[in-house]
Amino acid sequence: MLLAGPFLKGLDAVADIKSSTDGMAKLMAKAGLDGLIGIGIDRAANAHLATHEGEALTNYFIRVIKDEATARSHLDLAPLSPKPTEIENIAARLDLISERIEGISGQLEPKSGPLFSVAADAYYAKIKKAKGTKGHKKDGSPKVNPELSYIEHRRNVFLQLMPDRPVSSYTEEDIQDFVDELQWLDPDYSTSPDYQVGKIKEFIQENKSRSGPRLARGTIENNYLPRIFSIIRHGCKMDKIPYPLDGCRIIFSDEIPKPKNQIPPDYTTLNRIFRKGLATGVLADALLPPLGYVVGRRLGIIAFLRAEHIRPYHGCYIVAPHDIVQIHEASQQLIVPIKTEVSLNFYVLHNFFVDCGLVGWMMRQEGFIFKLLHEAEDPADAASKRMQRLFEGVADPHLYQTYHGLRHGRKNEDIDNSLSPAASRIQAGRAPGSDDDMYGQGHLTAAQVKMIANAPLSPEIDWRMFERRNWDEYAARARWPRHFKTNWDQSGLVS
View (spheres, rainbow, N blue to C red):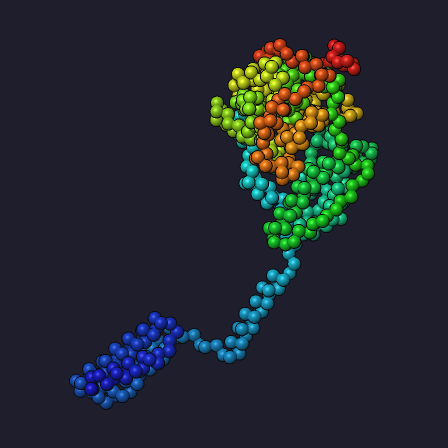
């Protein structure tokens, strides 16, 4: 019992250990129990110290077990930091409450969002990541998506005319002020030899002083404002704050040109356009106008026509456009400038083009039909400029007759030929007019294909001009005629 007595007291004391950490508690228990075991052994051996001071030693080692301060002194460890007073505890709690109140106050303060310039850069980066490049240039380098150029330009113009402020601070009045200034931009400002975005204010002031032509309402509504609104909306989403311009209503001056109403060329004008196109000797000039008029498709779609896109279907011939064209010889992809997904629906080639040998000739070609257009960096843009020149001096400028007007003419012809509105829309690649238009995957039926392929062509157009043409000679032309000029009277080409 002399040996075990101190140790048993130590085991009882272990239950009352009070320490700062579990590790410290183990050290306290081990140190105290080791000391008590030593006392028991010394007592059994009748050691003088254990016999005469045993009780005091036992109490000491029990304190080593129970009290961390005694244990740290015994083990030569650093003493515990002094416990804070009640006042210090209260002060610490007040500091914590104050920090939490400040944090809540910061959250309750209204956010204003990033600056317009910052939001514009973030929106630009988002669109660039989502849409990437748009095919490749002829040197193999990637083309910048045109939308990125539009965003950057509209951003710069806005910041030239308006202060760079947090996005949530812009009001309907601010946008109205922007439009009131922007409208005074000359429509042809970008063609000026000294054009720079940084000189926008100068251009506007100069145009105001001479009461010059103003930017069209359609350009402001469709090309500028939607991108400005998208940037501001994106900035609001970045900080998760309300968009301030919902329901924004802009009032346009009556002096701003309204969208022009395109009037389709009449048959006399069509004959002049077709003859002039054939007279240039250039394949695109000769075929883009009649194809655009008869099939009703956008110029950009027809400019990317390839031989393998022409396929037999229900006893007729159709064209199945692609949105991406793989150029195997160059290991490149070209992005076709489609406006909507319905532009990828097939369209029917009239049997006149079959009978005059044009379809057979096109199917024997390799790759793009209009190869000369594809020597340009932007084939669709090259085709557009080509058609502008072709229509000059032939179409009536007072009637705003352009290549796009051929689509309007096609619609009128479809009405005269009793083609259903849905079939006319699908053939021309226009957006659906109703949900019913989308049944059958939005494609033409066999009967509609045959009806379009054999629809009557106006007898007022001299279609014989396209017969017995050597299309190989047209396609072989290696460059555009530089000085092709014509004079026209009401009957057609005269010189």
